[in-house]
Length: 399
Image 1: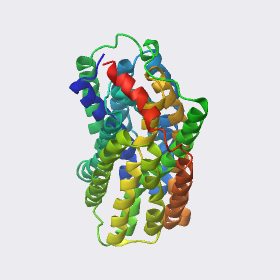
Image 2: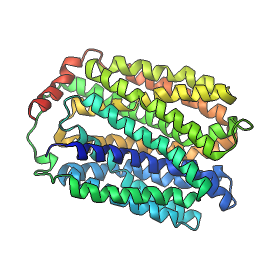
Image 3: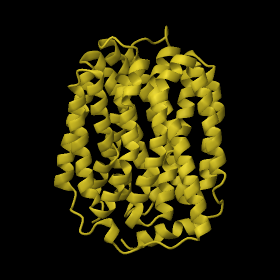
């Protein structure tokens, strides 16, 4: 099976929907809390189950993707996400909401270990392909900010879940109708990559795991906290939630295009020398944001999100370069289970941390995490471009 335009388009839309669903709650939490007579900080921990399952569910999802089939798993993803969107919209209390969000996390865990390997399995320029896919995912984050803000203001927070739910169900039906069946599950296909030295592979896997954990912490802290950060520090300048949603969407849209540039660079240069400056520059930007307010804060948020989003393609690029396609979903599932399992703590601690210490402390903590990420990336070997490209060239030549 080759990936035609409908398949690639639906896979990229799936990435957008995956991130959109995970960020709806963070944008709508103030409206939900107001309706139920709660503070948003107290309601935020009820979404932690979604992010825990987003990580832990990657293990069985990746295994099923390789052994059963990626097409079938993507159909399950779309239909499951759509059903959960409608279920969340019907929530009548915090525990219903928590259970429905957790179930959504189960289905959302399917996309990354299944959809991305399915997308790049025949790509001639996998770095750029991952960049485009990352752009789609982050546009989903931007759409979540603007669409949720609009629906919350004009229809209500329940519509913010129901409308994307309907879209996901439609995509599931289109995927079932338009994407060809797989002739053979990935695990049973011939091997197409070369073997790398064990020492090299060990270092890559170590960096992959450590960098994935720290970058996932940063991603969850920023994407789940930026809405309330802007609401707090732009108070008096912008108080309308829909306008704040547009401002946040603008940040995410501009920042998302960084992944196209990064994808091109990954195809041409060793990962270390592209990744290292991107994570290093996050440190001073988070420290600047810790003490900023008003429009200067907005400018710094836009700047640090460019580098946060720009760092997203690297772990997937490592998997594509160093792991054979027959087991990419399983390897991706393992790294996602570890990284997102740990980083789900960011979602749980976000509300209590801001409530107790404020956003200044949170942003300082993120600067420290980015500094550790920089140290991890520095462990990557610096001269692996030829060996890294060999598996991709071999895979592309078999098309």
